[in-house]
Amino acid sequence: MKTVSENRAFGGVQGVYAHPSAATGTEMTFGLFLPAEAEEGAVPVLWFLSGLTCTHENAMVKAGAQRWAAEEGIALIFPDTSPRGEGVANDPAYDMGQGAGFYVNATQKPWAPQFRMWDYLTEDLPRLVFSAFPLAQAAQGITGHSMGGHGALTLAMGLPGRFRSLSAFAPICHPTSSDWGRKQFTGYLGEDESLWAPHDATLLMRKRGFDGPILIDQGTADPYLDLLMPEALAGAMAGRRQGGAFRMQKGYDHSYFFVSTFIEEHIAFHAAALHA
Amino acid sequence: MKTVSENRAFGGVQGVYAHPSAATGTEMTFGLFLPAEAEEGAVPVLWFLSGLTCTHENAMVKAGAQRWAAEEGIALIFPDTSPRGEGVANDPAYDMGQGAGFYVNATQKPWAPQFRMWDYLTEDLPRLVFSAFPLAQAAQGITGHSMGGHGALTLAMGLPGRFRSLSAFAPICHPTSSDWGRKQFTGYLGEDESLWAPHDATLLMRKRGFDGPILIDQGTADPYLDLLMPEALAGAMAGRRQGGAFRMQKGYDHSYFFVSTFIEEHIAFHAAALHA
Image (cartoon, rainbow over all chains, first blue to last red; front, side, top):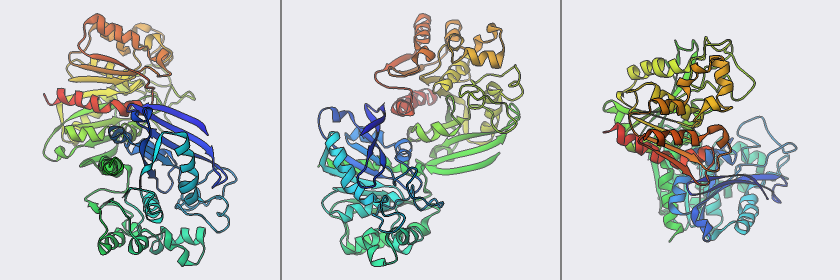
């Protein structure tokens, strides 16, 4: 692992690190904010998964999350959204290939060898960060924005017991029924739709739900509502009697201005669960 | 004036607007955050001047200022740092030409016709924003980062009575004695150094000071300390018995992580003066 940069921020350190990943076979980059409390011992950690076109950097510089993580004494991890670089498969569309990993293990050509973001996030990167940094493996929460909200929801429900708390900003809620999902799952996972189900938050909610608190925010002025399909997940949560809140925020859109407005509440929400 | 974008943020609106500028003869772009209180009437306003290479966008998306402006009920203006576009003079160096206006009215070729950022910020843009938006002209504060800290200091001291409060993050403090200054003033203002003095914060502090509170933050790990020369301005402030605080923040560098860490205190500082 190599240090790309470290900046003091809010009494802690905002670092960026790069490492060879066994899962993707590429060099991967991630951001990690450690609060001052990390100097004394292991701290809880909140994963932030980003959306289409994002790198590790977007949420790290735009979400305004460090202020609240510092206040709560929790770390933040900002992974990348796909493998990258020359020699890595890509697609001219913004919503396929590099920057659009959709948090799955691809099984189809040309993606299969490298687009293994599920394994990267659930095995490879945790192994690295929990050995290299003072992070409490037993106190993990997860959140994300848009495609990253989809990732947060599917990882949290797909790995029972791994995460104590789950939130999302404008997540892709029902990708097996959306153009943000069907195209990518066909490309990455193939035509057999039964293999898509573990990567659809609405289907996971209907089948098993999440054993912990959930907080979801969605703007009512989001231009992508038809693709995100919040009604599917909100209905599934209510239908299952899943504990949690699905909030429609009047007038907010899909931007980081929306995320930064509500990040304070999300981090407080996670901190309450992670410090419990 | 045309609306480039408007996003709901923290209960208010983060807008970006473009307008033809008489001062520069070009189209200029600026960001304006209006808190919810602006729906009811005119609100105080804090100007944020940005540093080298920045557009109107950098501080708007990275500084995390809107959260605190919303809490205090004050507006934020994020101007650009120079005229831009094809047909506008430029220089291959990052610290000259477009993105590096240094907040002066250039008198030298090729800059003179368009690089008139002093007039743009003191006449042109105020005329526009105070007529088009609910902003209280009698309640203005000013801040900035790096070259923008230089701009904030020189505008505030150069226009007595205009601004009630003044702050800066890692400002260029003594440009007539620094390579961040001498090169640009020679290029924009010519060889006669007596014409540079109105654009040097340390010289202005020695000569007249500021009739209001001042707050300056500077990181001790800033890689540009030799160019910024904080010791010159801190010495001039103390020598003059200027009311204010010049704070050296241990371990912080020149990045927006530094700015975002202390922006809460700066906005509270300005709000106290602007609501008084």
